[in-house]
Image (tube, rainbow, N blue to C red; front, side, top):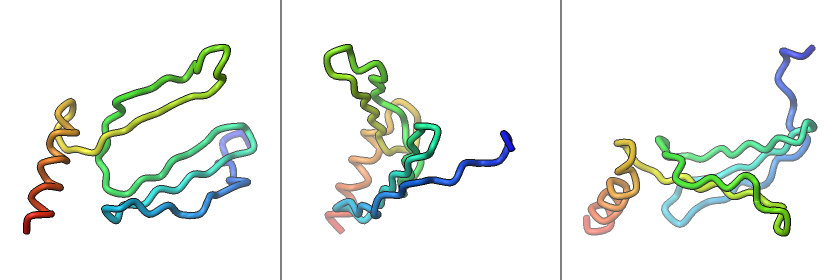
Length: 85
């Protein structure tokens, strides 16, 4: 049983971003949370998982892109060229 994937006990409604990408958040009985985002690849650009004693929350930020650390720049260029044409 341990090797069977958990079924999500909550799946939030699909969120559509202004550029057409979508995000879905699911929560699982073991306390884990899963984020599904269209438009991959993404680069993890921020992770504050401790949240500090007073806040008690975590933050994750991903930036879209195609070439590692310059991911945000590449995506911004792509958006600009798409919006001009």
